[in-house]
Length: 374
Ligand SMILES: [Zn+2]
Image 1: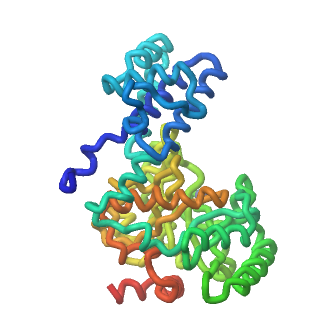
Image 2: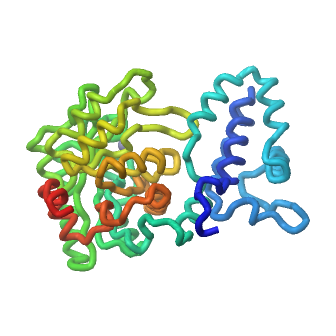
Image 3: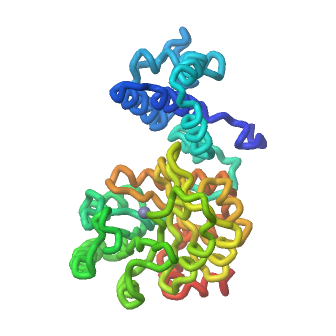
């Protein structure tokens, strides 16, 4: 098993959840659609593959959120690898074109069970959970997240982190409760208090998730950006366009303040493909500047996924593996990012979250320092 190619291993929970989502979009009743979507989400969040959860009699255990209709589909797939029930429902629905489009947008997404399998499989060369020292994208009560900065620090310490960055949205992104510069100054005081409490044990950085506009500019000025410990740049608009946006992403990577290109495509599983660009060119520019490419571990994003991350690895990029958490329990989403990094075989030395704090701070102060070092 150790030498087996990782992708020949079927992610059964992802396959099952995909069929359940197909079934959801084949429904004419909203209530049934939500029911099957909920069932798909429940399967994707399971810690174990369904193949390990069925009893010797072939029966599924009771899974919260899974009704009899979903159980029938799951049993079919486990027995045969496919679901005639779902295929017939799609035929009857006359929504095949939309469902086929959504199927294309599910590629390279991992279920929680697959993430756990990849993390525990020693045959991968990529980073381990033990090498991961801190998470560099998360949201607090200061924008669209829930926790206070104190709650975030406590939760990060429980996960064994040495540092983390709170990265609320900047003021340009009103829809996500973007933080004004006055609020950012108040948040800085709260973070200073957190750091005074934990001293040498843990360091909370004040980051910002800046929005990339149509031309690749950020939604805050150079001077404003300089007040933060780390600036992430991320696209939140024009994520459903068919045209090439290489120039926009090159401009973003070229902004002097930017250290991390966060969720580079802005894709969402089964829903949108995100930015279309010549990514090899973008990765080459990022590598030349020492800008890290993020693997966003939000299960719905998984952006970059391991296939594109392999190309960024080959371009010589640095990486940031982040949760994009909006609650403290979502900090575990960093594990999804780690799984993609392991599948892509990214060495821990290229992952800024695997560096000790002093090296991380040196890179934030001067991204070229990481290049001279390597
Ligand atoms: Zn974002």
